[in-house]
Length: 245
Image 1 (cartoon, rainbow, N blue to C red):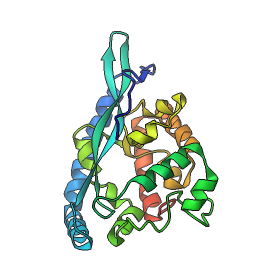
Image 2: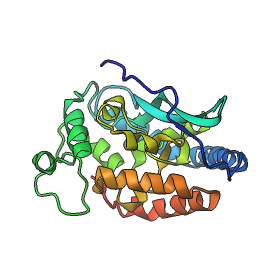
Image 3: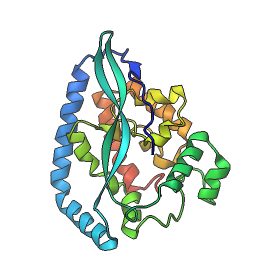
Image 4: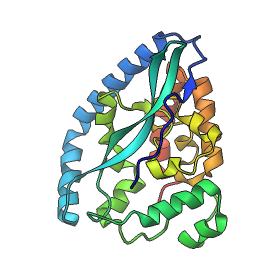
């Protein structure tokens, strides 16, 4: 897969009213919660790792190339640029699964191609996930992990490393960016998150343009209190499997 040409500077960070205090406080919150969660969930993570190994051959962790916004200093002040990074997930598919289906799904999702999306998930009802149904690449344990978002837990390590935050827009894969319009790129003018304002509104059950709108709303409203609100709302959303596969 050819690399996507990335803009050097995505956008100026015009909202300086928060200063660096928000960024520092958010980083402290991220590290504290991420490390505590990893420590508390360590027995469960071991069980999940064993279940994945028993379900199908291959690695426990799936490393995937994603794109993220990173705040940088320029001669004109703070700005956001796009860069690639490696995102970690528990493997939910058979090892070496073909990505063609996901690429087709993402291109249809970004274009709002309801006919194609319906073909990939026949009988979809409003509020249900747009993702392809009965994907043969997904293992049994993988389906359970996806339903409760447990496959995303290894991204806490991405948070500790400073590549992600607990709350923020979800980071896209490179072939998503290929189909982005200019206004879609603005959703990356923020550190990506494990959960986000768009995710708690319906996870994979909302359309792409609505997701972009909600991501931009988050960027405009973001604060420590708003981040805590999103984290608290995430818990019942995950437990109730709202908008999940």
